[in-house]
Structure formats: structure tokens, C-alpha cells
Amino acid sequence: MGPHTYSDEWKSDADRHWRECGCGAKSEEAEHSGGTATCTEKAVCSVCGSEYGELSPHTYSDEWKSDADRHWCECACGAKSEESEHTFGEWTERDGNREKSCVCGYTVIDPEHTVIEPGNDEGNGLSPVAIAAIVIGGIAVLGGAGAAAYRFASKKKK
Image (cartoon, rainbow, N blue to C red; front, side, top):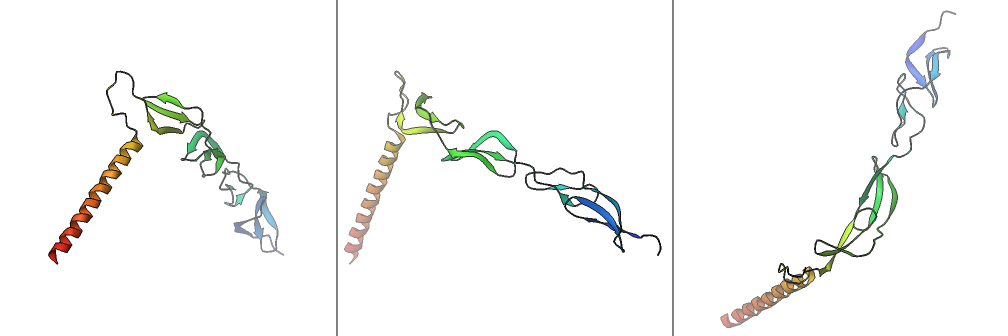
């Protein structure tokens, strides 16, 4: 029997790597090392290139993210922590509007309430909802008038 001839390729398992002879003898056997795990990928051994170890825990930002209903803190991978519905404080007045804020900074403005400061002639005192109702009502009236004119013209041609 001659000397061992070890492969140039690394063999590995979950914890170690080695080069192997055709007879099964191992050389350069060692634990995986190097690389850094993230919350989505295991570390990669700098010697043999195999993934090893466990995923690291998520690292959540201290900055709140939110939508109209909920807020949360987020990891770079998209995982969410501390997700819950908004919890609003009391109504306050600011910049002529009534508003309330959640602990995450999400703010809602009361569309029914516009504050007109004494001596300030800006605005007409109508809420945005009232203005929208007036515009929609006007469109409905004009549409009805157009339909009546069309019917009248159609009957006159016959």
C-alpha cells in the first residue's frame, strides 16, 4: 500500500470539513470557521465554502413603520416586531386642524372639524366633507338635466 492521495475537493458535514483519500482517510480536518450569519443566511466557511451554524436573530430597527391601521418595527429582511393596532391619544388642535397621534407618530386629522381663528377670514367655514357633498350634488343635478334634455330631443325627432 502506497501513501495516501487526498482529493483537492473539500468534504464537509454540519460542523467540520476535510480532504479525503480514496481509502477514506481524512486530512486537514477542522471545524468550519469564518463568515457571518444573518437572520436569512447561515455563515459560510471561509475554508471550504459550506454553510454552517445557525441563523442569527432578527435585528429590528428602532424606527416605527406604519400603515393606516397598524404599526411595527422592522428587520432588514422584512420581519416585523411589536406589530399592533394604532393607539391614539386625545384630540389636539394644531395648525387649524383637530388631530390625534399614535405612539408611533402616525397622525389622523378630523375631517369634520376645521378651526377658524378669530379675526382670520381665510376659509369659508365648511368642512371638506361638506364641500365634497356640494360638489357631488351639483354633478348629480347637472347630470339629471343633461339626461332630461337628451330625452326631450329624442322624442322631438320622432
